[in-house]
Length: 472
Image 1 (cartoon, helix red, strand yellow):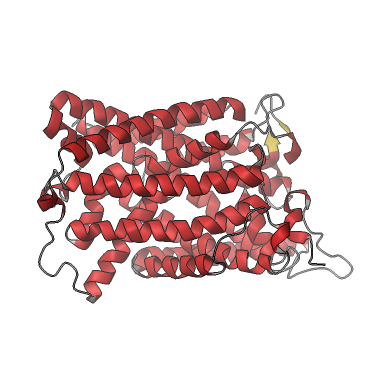
Image 2 (cartoon, rainbow, N blue to C red; image 1 turned 90 degrees about the horizontal axis):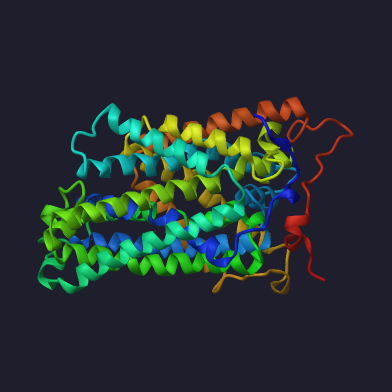
């Protein structure tokens, strides 16, 4: 690739401030998710009690967000989770395997996450172009992925400006939807619960788990800043604040949006709709307004794809710089200072993933993340606490360890309700990754195949020094 050379991590520009980081999180979180998943959540629970799924999802996201905030502030590195898991489980032993599994799933999850936004965009575009079906829709999704790859082929300062611009449009769209819902709200529709809606049966908890998984897909992305933490100014303050601000603001907005819409559109109709928000606006203000809001929602989806690609492109780069992944991923542009090869590979991979359905993309994404990353990170923050004092940590989660424990319980509950098809494939992915690691480790003579007299040196500690200051 012309004009690219290998660089070290220190050459990345710190061009993203607090509000740039917060906007990158929020456009990642909003995307197409809340505009297409309202019918799915209602169907999962069979009525407007589906709002419980968004509440449960918000609680899990808040608890998990505190985990990310503490880890991200302590280790502000691009590709953050790789370092969190490596250091928590031991950079000379088990941490090698656990961090490799994260990289393994990230190579799959990155394109799947990006593709979910692109496929959702193509599905929603059918409201404007009904003939956009089959290969035409796939072509649109592929084009979105490739166009975002081109847009991200630039330095982080330009990306920060683009991120803020996209975020402004997304927030304006959301404000319009909320205003429309609040000014036309009818409580008897919003709270028209079917008989037995709150009967605590097996079906109720299974439905709540399904609705929570959908809600967590909508919340997913609050940690995006941790994936490019090395490019954030004052990261030990900006990272925790951007995470918690993102969850708090969008948690309130999502709940209000869902209640507002079903307070206007009967939930029986909303459950069957393919473009419920556009139909909601059309019913209130006419067909032209429905088309306008559909265009704005497509913009939000496009912005989400942009933000996800930004974050995930930094993960294999960071591992390659640490010599834990293929060296080609460590190449950065000589003048624009961004991981060019990683951006291109993730973008092309996401275009290929557009061949999957939106339902499969959402479920595979969440199940793989829970199994191979989220639960492990909650354990990681507990393990890393043993190595430092309170004063040595830039951010300390309140009520420790309760948020981490609740997050683990929430993730396991959602995983149990997701279905064996997706869990089974997650197990296969973990087994394949473990075998790949063993082959890699044997070739390099690393744990558990260390050669006599040759130890595994720990990685560069510059970005993790907070966790290596022992108590006096």
